[in-house]
Length: 153
Image 1: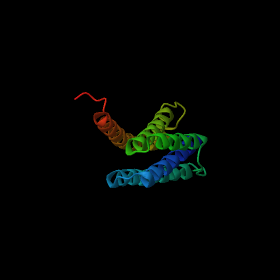
Image 2: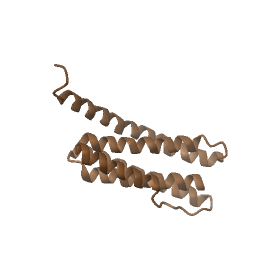
Image 3: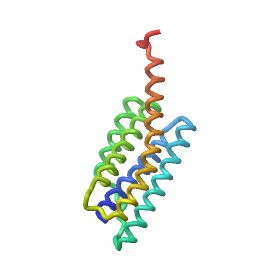
Image 4: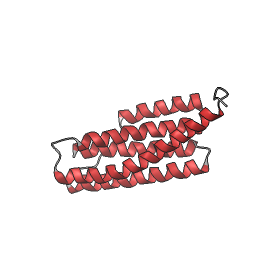
């Protein structure tokens, strides 16, 4: 239950972060992507809540200290870069941290098989979507590099 609650908090934090990126994005396509991902994170959180209740626990989706730190980094990056690439960086960094948290949970040898399966299913969804955010980040970085006056012609 403790592991699931920890993942629940991190997943809820991710939904909030992605929603914030959605609001700050100037690109309709990016807003649609991030909004969809935020909705998916909320759905993932509901799956975790159901598993926690099924184990006799109480879901605790309160924000984590890590989320507050990630929001501060996101704010700083956006203030410095102030563009879509900065937002994609913030989203990608947050999703990478969430992915690592799920991987660490899956590596816990003390987890029951049913709990591990819940985490594995949610992580599989997360991992595929995390690649979308990472690909967007690389694309925007490439565009920024190509537009740079230092880029060789």
